[in-house]
Image (tube, rainbow, N blue to C red; front, top):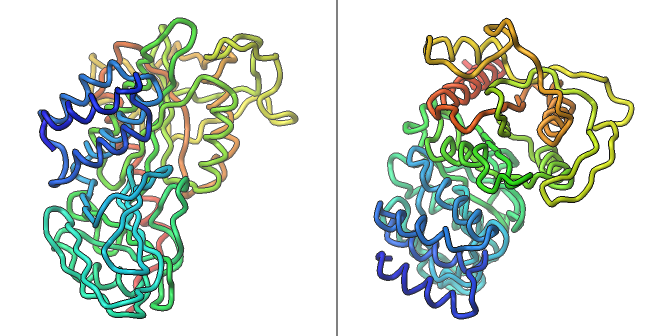
Length: 406
């Protein structure tokens, strides 16, 4: 899709006066055809996004953040686009009885059904065209096994059983698919680009920032989260999230993370005081208006919970990583800042930090926590933080892995 094509698609979408989330999905999927977005297409979409409503703008930024991780993103084209629902695009693949889904923000290629006739399914992965001969009676798992056997040399696939539901986040965990499975999904990744050893699967890394509140319409924490996602991280695939500044949004996010725990969660909020790791969240939500200007009642974050918790983030590891910036360092921890004081605003930042500490402090497979940044916090320092946390978590995973059989 050319820049001219993007302009035409956006003009068509604006016939009703707006561009909604579904239209953004369709436009980006068209732009991705032909193996991704080039620099001019990306710039055009970013420019146009300034005229979108906030939901559509954030949806576009999610797309661009995912695809910007060139070390992690695997581009897939399959059949004709039928519809978009939730996190997935539904495709027809030209074989009766079989349908496919492609992840919008991850590398999931999912199939469902049993072939009702012989056919030929054509798929392009990382620009390499694959022709899959399908026989009547073959299941989704059998067809995906054939796709896996023809993957480009730098791409690896993990074939898992089950249908990926439209609003679920796909992962590299689950039961292996068997040939009788009529629903299966192939998770794709590039081990060499991610710095992974043979047999290792990517870590799931979630970075979040907050949206508008109290007159701040362009929240630096959301911008930082997006930039970290676009930069990518060795060992993992980053998912970018922008959270509304409400207890409902935080509760929904934490519940989702509980259902499908990632390896790393780094959440951020903006401060006009200083950038630092929030090491001691407290069990207190103050009386104030949230980001939607709705009043919040003063209460405990978790009734009956400890008054104060320790962050689950590895503070010493973070502090060591930041030492390299010397006198230019602006991100603090209690290990290096004699004047360190934890956030005591009792606002949504602390609310998220306390919830993350409650859910994940006793879960070695996930490290999670909250940090404040300022509008001037350098991206390279926060990138160093994320790299250090992810690398440490990868070391922990490797240490816990069973010894190879002799």
